Length: 131
Image (cartoon, rainbow, N blue to C red; front, side, top):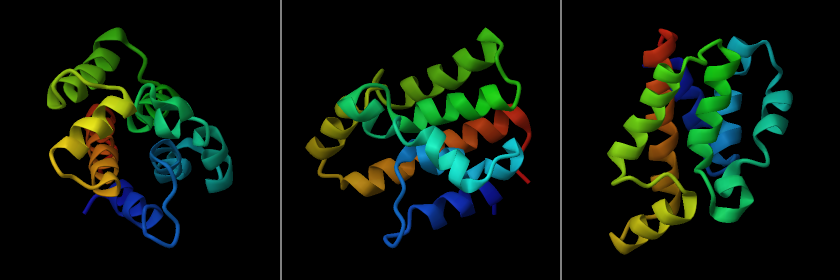
């Protein structure tokens, strides 16, 4: 299995449960030359849609990782954002995604875990870091 997904699952365990952006940043800490603590600090204010229901932390965390890995072309960044938006009926804001999930009877943690895994799969596809 993908080492970034395995790391994210560990970080989202009930004992730890970091926010979405922290989880993504920490899953790639080694690739980025960061300690897990540094990666956590970089992502801490992006969870919960920048702590105000804005853009999902799995998306902002993914964009930070892509940028740190040198992926900044409008085409690649646009493909990342478009894929997530298309997979979620045009929604990218945390509050909207969580509201839609709740209306469907979904649990918050499972939804957020799914968003994290989706973001990681897209990052790895764009960077070839799925080993």
